[in-house]
Amino acid sequence: MAHPAQDAVPPAAPGGPAPVVMPEANGVGLAAQQPQNNGISEDEIALYDRQIRLWGMQAQEKIRSANVLLITMKALANEIAKNLVLAGINSLTILDPEPVTAADFGAQFLLDEDEARVGMNRAEAASVNLRKLNPRVNVVVDTDHICSKGPSFFAAFNVVVATDLGPQNMVLVNTATRLNNRPFYAAATHGLYGYIFADLIEHDFVVERDVSRPTELGAETRTRAIVGVTVRDDEAGKKVERVTKRELYSTWTLADAATLPEAHRRSPRRLRAVTPALSCLRALFEFVQERGRLPATVPAHARADLERFTLLANDKHNHLGLPTATLRSEFLRSFLQNLGAEIAPVTAILGGQLAQDVINVLGGTQQPIQNTVIFDGNTMEASMFALHPDDEVLGSAQLVSSSAADVQLAVATASTVVPVLGPDGQMMTDVIGMAPMGIPPVGMLQQ
Image 1 (tube, one colour):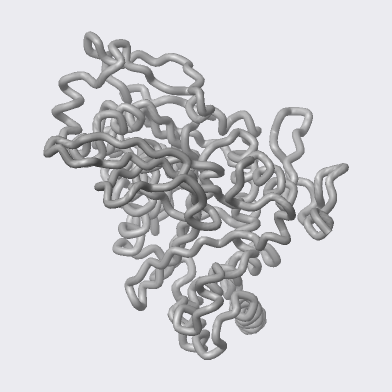
Image 2 (image 1 turned 180 degrees about the vertical axis):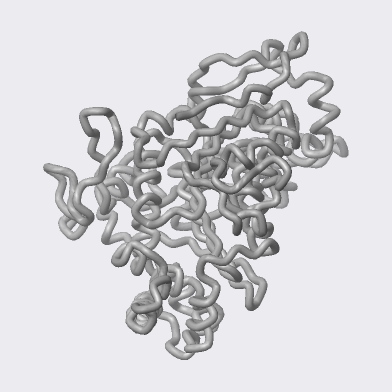
């Protein structure tokens, strides 16, 4: 059951923010906090001065009205929560039904051994220090299980971030965010390895640059188009373009089944540089879907798990078109040995990157993640891949088109998990691989 923090928000100062329900024009913020004076107070300007200089007053106003849902409070989520709270969002809701374990104290810096205890709810325990970081941010704890939440639950948030979820629950949440037109992030770490996935559905952002030659409207890439250009004079009298770009995204289900971008497929050098962690993470998703657990967690099944995981990893590697030589047994062994581990430098890197991307999306500044980041601690590199279904999967609706609604319909139709509302309003899933009644499966979209 959700219960707001008792001491999360101090009384509003005169002219300060007052909570209201305010649907925005783009449908992104149903629960927002709108300043009564349509501006940030002097105290907030002083508090957030550095970041206001970085991304501007308008972006900070959007950030301070944002409500973020963070699912699962482990080491990676600690980093994400810390950065979002310090950035000054309106509220952070932490959804986690699990209790604190002894191992959590070695990985989560938000857990205070003097106040938290084994068996205490994990989100509740972490929320104590989160509120101390920035008392202006309302930290809400929800101890329900994600499967108990109906689709309408997600409508109250501007962004949904899911960490350390299994593939079935990840698809469940992604489906709900699509139904409510809410940006969705998923992320996890396993020791030296990790990933970030973003499904922002359709996202506009603005970049400014000096005018060398006029920028034309139209497609830049398969997923990105320039949809608006304005010109202004800066303080030095130089012409500066304000360019609005639009990115289109795929669901996690479609991205997980996609091949590499064409630019990679045409370049042997690029293919050799792709970390085998991508293949192993995809193999891990499928293994967990099959067995409901991580590989080798049951000693009696360790050998069979190793054989099955190796087969899956090779299949994923071949599907991606990657050279066989880049998936070595040493890497497979390292990946399996890291499963379930939480390493602070890795969670700090990925958590910081994800939180910064959320801030950029909320403020509408800078190009966001498109759409998958894979971190390989062996090389200390985080590589980004735009993973989308081929055009034949989408049929006549291309990712960059004049009608984004056509694309979203095709993406939704191609999803492998169908949301079904039960009598109590909870969200359940139909049989994996089945299409909604009356809609043909993926292979029949556009023959």
